[in-house]
Length: 79
Ligand SMILES: [Zn+2]
Image (cartoon, rainbow, N blue to C red):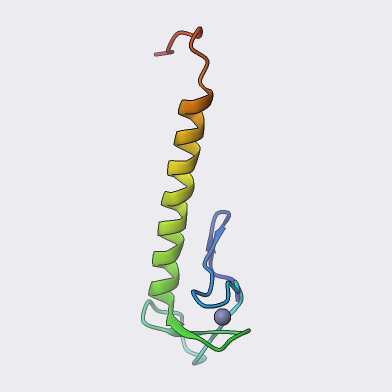
């Protein structure tokens, strides 16, 4: 399964894979162990969500920096 929020997908820290398999067949919880389908690295659902948060933050900062760089000076700030 791909763990994603909006357009940000959690990636395996080792190989970058976005597809993970749930270790047990129970309900998905934060502590559920997830295994990368490519390299077998184990992580938890919580860690995957955390990494999505970090990636989303990184993208937001990038977008902000881009906005600042590209903002035309002649245009007055809108309220
Ligand atoms: Zn992996």
